[in-house]
Picture 1 (cartoon, rainbow, N blue to C red):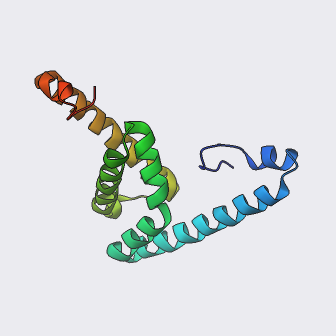
Picture 2 (picture 1 turned 180 degrees about the horizontal axis):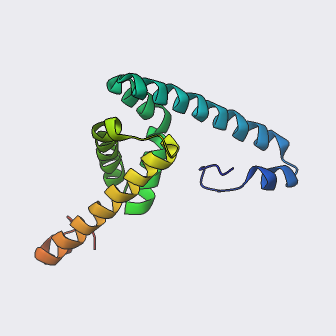
Picture 3 (picture 1 turned 45 degrees about the horizontal axis):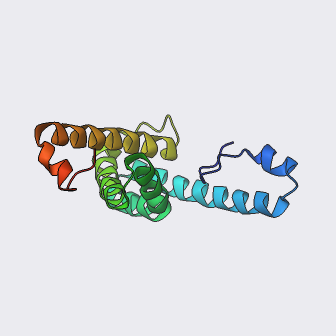
Length: 139
């Protein structure tokens, strides 16, 4: 069982480290994410996509912004791409087959959107090299 908190430690690693308060904290966070995922999946199966999106945003916004910022290297770009991820998830919700966890599905969308943003940025610099010189677009 993995947790996405930047450290990527397993529960067994946390337990063997002797820091049981950290284990309890991670378990509470995990339970909260599971409860939110169950609610979003229930709303998705009922066709209440807008409410499901609100649940996704409440649960995963801070994680997705951190993930996108780490991949893109810029906080503003990370926040912008995270919004695009939620939009893409909302559009794809009717096709969500629930074979994977909601978290896995959402972060797969985030990965694809970040890679697309990196490609677009690379292409912009290739087509307009003066933008990089003026600091408008990073390399």
